[in-house]
Length: 148
Image 1 (cartoon, rainbow, N blue to C red):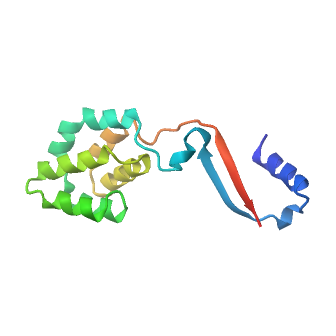
Image 2: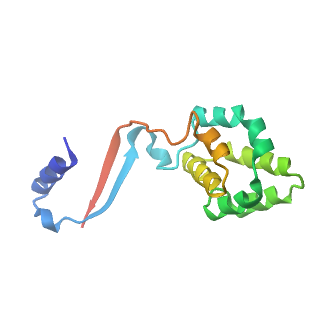
Image 3: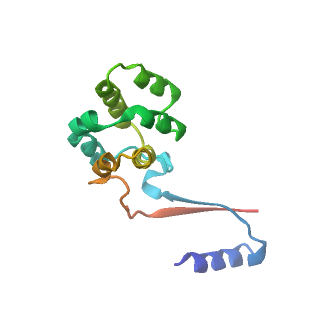
């Protein structure tokens, strides 16, 4: 059943004219993972990518402007940012950032890719996009509609 047909059926069932229905909130949430909402933990694919490219990440990443950008995009919090910045050597900062990202969500992983592109590090972003991240996943959805 398409959304339009479903909506027409719903308007008949609740006996309201179509024009009077205000769709306040349409939430598309995978039925199998509703407990996470849209903030899913990393899948094995992304964790494997982080592990596979660990040496390249630690050696090649320029974390200077990246850390502040990740903080502004809410990928990391202030405590994490301060902890990373407290490290003296660049490779130590990169190691700590990698450790944090291994425990982040899919949303944060994808925001990290965006931040890498924004800080002119497309080679690192390409590593993260390689076998994981930003892939289309086909799942069943639950449609929640609030009618006023």
